[in-house]
Each structure stands twice: as structure tokens, then as C-alpha cells.
Length: 100
Length: 164
Image (cartoon, rainbow over all chains, first blue to last red):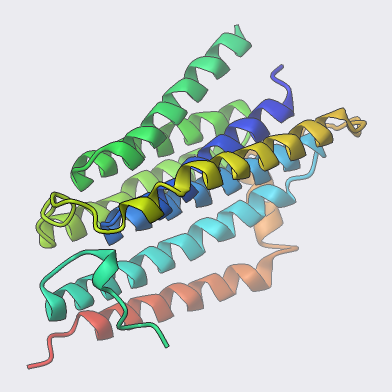
């Protein structure tokens, strides 16, 4: 049996890689994929914690996170495509259109 | 045996995550992310969450990544990160900040690991157990999910509509 803290450590590593990806990349699509990576790391931590406490509620929560992630990806990609249509460029440094 | 398998899967997961962040071509990045999502599905299986493992493959590796690949095909990849980076010195800050975040998270995990673990019966992860949970305790959020997905669908159509 693998100790639950190993899963949590792996989740921490994956989350950090996702956050670093968001910071260092310039392509909004890759940034978005890095966000998905971090989201998955959090999901893994949720399942590991739920397993540790013998509680299936964590798994139900992960199910809802997946549904919300699906909606988020659809809307986010539509926004990126819409911005690309107007700008004809795809670099995060040019994108200040949604800044207040 | 189980430990070897875990280390192997964890290595593939970390390697594919690094591939996503390092590779310049977004298509390669997307394929690396598919591998990563698959390894997370395997980890769910080792945790006894069978339903989530299947949902992970179907929803993430299936639906979401196909959407990503379509978006990459539409948006002509690889043209935006070829030139020199005008904000290189700022992006180099990511290394110490990422290191600090990792250190913090690992310290948190190790601190928790030292705490006494409640003697846990393993949580059921079968389709029957999760289904029962979703349709009793979480019935309202479950139904609200359908409204959320409908709203997202309508919103995407609105955004994607060409303004002639």
C-alpha cells in the first residue's frame, strides 16, 4: 500500500509545474493547458485526502470539478478564438483588452 | 511491486507535465497533457476511484483535449513564441517563485504526514457508490451542473457567432 503523502507530494509537484507554466509561457493556449494541469493536481490531492479519511465525498467533489472544468474550457477557448479573430495575433503580452 | 508501479507512473506524470511546459509547439504540449491526464487516471485507479478514472479519460483526455486540439488547429500554432522574449527577465523570476511554492507545498505535505492518520476504511469508489452519493446527498449540485453546462454551451455559441 502506497502512503497517501506520496500522492500529495506528486500533486504538489504537478501543481507547481502548472503554475510555472502559466508564468513562463506566452501562448494563451499553453497557459490554459497549464491551468488544466494544476487543476488536475488539485483533483488528485482531493481524491488522496478522501481516501485517507475513508470518505467518498472527495470523489463527488472531483466529479463536480470535472464538470466545471469542461464548461470553463469551452468558454475560455471561445474567448481566445474570438480575441484571435480581432487581433490576428496570439501572444499574452498583447492582451490587455479585458483589463479594467 | 505497488511502490515500483507508483514511482514509474509518477515519473511519467512529472515528465509529461514538464514536456507541456517546456515544448514550444502547442500540439506537442497538448499531446503531453493527454499523457499526463492518463497517468492521473491510473493514479485514481490505484486509489480505488474507478468511476473517476473512467470519467477522467472520457471527459478530460477525450472531450476537453479534443477541444484544445481543435482550437490549436484553428489558431495556427507556433508563430507567437519564435521571436526573442521582450520580458525575459520578468519570466526568469518564475524559477525562484516556483521553487518557493514547491517548498511550501512539500513542507505542508510532510507536516501533515507526521500527524496521526485516522484509521480509515477505504472509501468506496465504484460506480454504484458514487452514483448513490450523487443522487442522494449531492442531488441539487448534480442538477445544477446540467444548468451550468447548458449556460456554457449557449455562451460559447454566442461568442463563436460571426458578426456579419
